[in-house]
Length: 153
Image 1 (tube, rainbow, N blue to C red):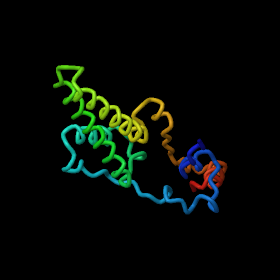
Image 2 (image 1 turned 135 degrees about the horizontal axis):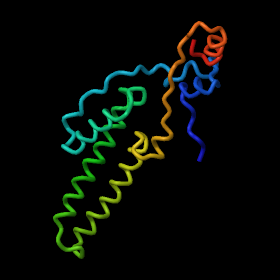
Image 3 (image 1 turned 60 degrees about the horizontal axis):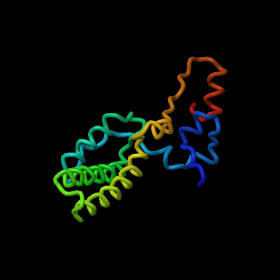
Image 4 (image 1 turned 30 degrees about the vertical axis):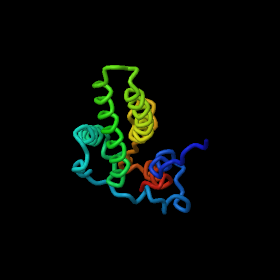
């Protein structure tokens, strides 16, 4: 599988930004804004997950366009928690209902894990998230030249 493309911010940080290639990329022009409150249709556990993720991730990482991915992840979490409650009420592990619930739980967890990896929910996923900061112009001509080459000035 191919490596995912670098973001425009990562190109700028690495010094590989080229306006002719990267200036028209969507990720460079998406504005960061406050995330909306959790949607009403989410259940208790989904809303809890929504708030935890929004509070935990830096504003540079989570932008308003991520709402739909976040909503999907929270819905998968809600379903997983409800299935766990249903499994806890089964008294007989030989009951066919218990088996079906476990199968559904495994499928739901798989989808939740895939969605949550996009939001850095494991240490290895968090290691892939990069936040770049623009360097400040301190009046030094070499710093200014470096910033211009990187496309940050």
